[in-house]
Amino acid sequence: MTVQRYFIYFAYDGTNYHGWQIQPNGITVQECLEKALSIALRQEMKVIGAGRTDAGVHASLMVAHFDLYTEELLDLDFMTEKLNRLLPPDISVFKLKQVKPDVHARFAARSRTYKYYVTTSKYAFNRQYHWRVYGELDFEKMNEAAQTLFRYADFTSFSKLHTDVKTNICEMMQAEWTQVDTTTWVFTIRADRFLRNMVRAIVGTLIEVGRGKLSIEGFQQVIELQDRSKAGTSAPGNALFLVDVEYSDDIFI
Image 1 (cartoon, rainbow, N blue to C red):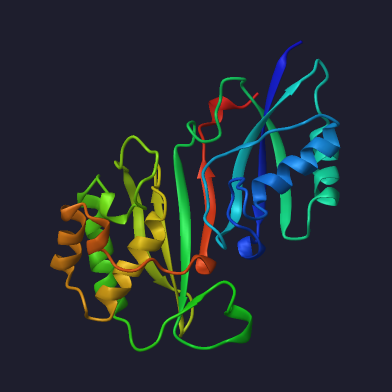
Image 2 (cartoon, one colour):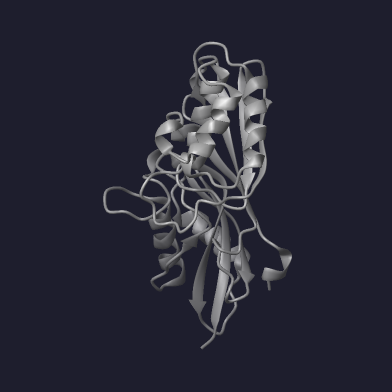
């Protein structure tokens, strides 16, 4: 019996979940997806995600892979629709694609992109998906500081402590603040990989720059010290979105 490996592309509102990865103390996105797949395919299924998002963090595009031991090919459109009927309203599947059997959703990813939304005004419908910050922020200065991220590769200062990763080296590809409207800004950051809590720690530290509590030189020193305690407080998870995971075309069948 042959092994077929499939990528599943999906989105979720992380408000009601304790993050992506299965854990004993609360419901997770991975748990819901595995349950739906197990029902749809009538066998116990395990999925491996392209990354891990923390509690309350959202994904407008996440990718995971699963293996199916069968000779028959899946009807991908039918299975997509079936999963959407089985999954809760805050998780939606876009598509399934068959990949080569040795392709790993996490390790084959060439880059990941996150967006973080900040607003300076109160608006009832933004409260779940934006971080409301008080006072004026110097976004021009925050962008200057963000550009210095490209000078570095070791981001230990922005990593959650005591994680199981072997290296804190990341290749930064994009990091910039752009204005959405008069009171809303979004920070877009793209890299080959991210450390646990890294985006939220960077945003929290850049906010310190924007408030004038930390200079651009001070921001660089935070990175160089490779000490999490020197960086700013992590920004809240509810305003963070994983928006893209990129792969090379040659992995697909």
